[in-house]
Length: 317
Length: 217
Image (cartoon, rainbow over all chains, first blue to last red; front, top):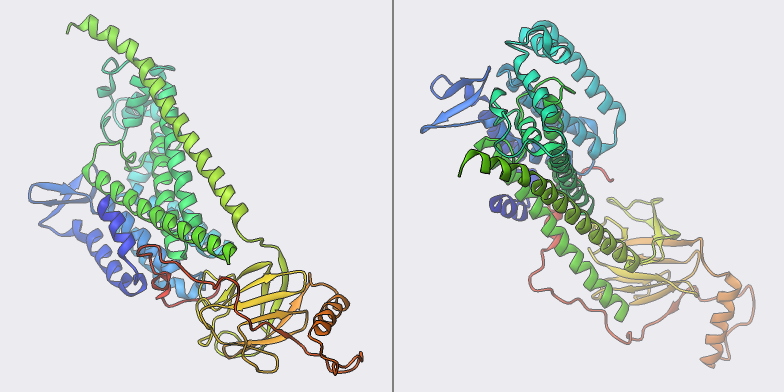
């Protein structure tokens, strides 16, 4: 978190170093393809093993993507000037699709589209991008069997309750069992849900702590997003404003995807609930993002204090 | 601890957890409300932002070309920086060039830190009182003021005549078609010089703008 805050406060010449950052990001995302260090885990090849630790590069590259997008879209450029940045984001999505990390693809794609719209207010290009994304989703559904499985299970998990639908069914039973106040800490059976500590942590929390607790948890996320948007509104440069916007949008999308997956509102994706799910890469990445946000907030506060002082000088003069 | 004792504790603790979470949410909401009230107070303190007219470029180049117009609010700062209320992007216009304020007599402009300004006749000035249609120069950019909330010309004329009479200039023409002085120079030093205090080591906003600016917002 400290690194994030210090980084955003100290980084001035973002335009100059953005190409280098983009290259590093692409290299990091492609690193799971390397035969020595790449790891295939949970149906996706998006892990890297280093010195006994396994890390997920797509998690660390989330704030980097946002910084690159903010730099490329700042100062409201024309579409032609945005093409390199959009191409970079498309490359990232392509690499992640090849790694079968659909959740990250969705996150990266939606974040790019929303940040572009926030930067340029160009509804035509934004809707075109969303349309192309929808078309790509249809193509992926027709071409990739695991996508078809996920959609089929999302529509009706009971078609295969003992195998592919088991996880989602257990999640729904757990959420229903919790009631308003939950079954009590340690009194539920969240372990019946596969990957209860990572992908289905929300269902586990709802089972043991209840609906009120779960809704309050979601309200906390909403408040973080609200205050992040205020930081974005008060930022003094378009780069900082877009960075803050991108960070909270990604946080919100991630929360929506995982909670939606747990409650069968959306198909399951392999994203994590920020700051709650088990996962070192996600935790470090989220703390770095929070550090960026706090750094931007501190810069806004200093600018505001200076403005107030200038107002007082002006009134005195 | 036996299983039954733990069960009792767990059943009791679930209400505590729910209450704790509700408390966190309420506290966060209260902080948000306090911040929004503070922001509303700051907005009240900030200069009035109603549009009172516009500045039109008569002569200029670079990114301040002839014909460009800048909306003029009731009070603010003219300069080249992004934080300026009237942003004139020209190499001869400083980041913080002058301050302006709409008064009953017209638009009063005062330069900041000796920035170059001249009246319509080319005479250097530190402070100008402009009426609708008056011309002046900031740096090398010639501008004309168009006021939509200006006092009527007759009122300005009467105000100037009162000041001219007070100056005991008996040779001042009393003819409607005689050439009237376009601007009134206020060359005396302000009561309290406009100065900037340094807040420790503030972040230099110039560093924010060390970027390749693209199109305007």
